[in-house]
Image 1 (cartoon, rainbow, N blue to C red):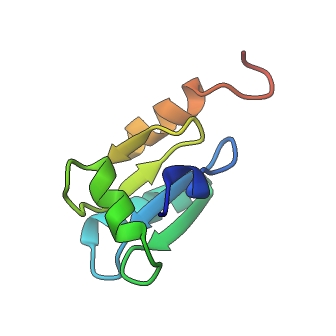
Image 2 (spheres, rainbow, N blue to C red):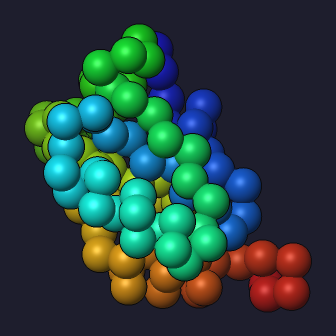
Length: 96
């Protein structure tokens, strides 16, 4: 079984579950690139078990983009501001 821990990103980065046809995914990916936020993108139509993982994080719905943060929490279709806030408040090398 595929679990979220298999896709936990490094500190300061995110994992984004997406599809090629998702406009919200394309928009968020572009915004993150402009901000210099590293993204590990996982296409749920190409990587076995990830569609089911996304569904488990979203009450049975395969909603993308679903973003996984270094602390193991997830957000569905988050705004750029939400991603930046959650990354800034996450524990890191200089924060307990």
